[in-house]
Amino acid sequence: MKALFKKAFTFYKYAALLFTVIYWVYLLVDDWIFIEKYSSSMSTIQKLDHLAVWMVYFAVYFLSFTIYYWLIALVSISVYHLWIKRTKAV
Image (cartoon, rainbow, N blue to C red; front, top):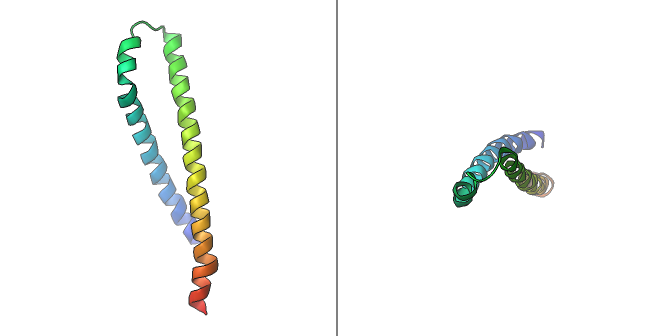
């Protein structure tokens, strides 16, 4: 069971990196119109506030991704270890 969690953690690292890159690229593409339209009229403090809001959204989405991933991994590993592996042994 420990080996399966190591594999799940390795996959999680790559999936988290992929999630992060895709999220930030999508965010820039999706909000590019607003960046061009409002960036020249905003002060540095307002730009930092908007960046902080983006970071909070990223943290919430990343936390959700992490919780869903580990719930699915835990259930999958438990089902495999408790039911499938035991039925093969019998």
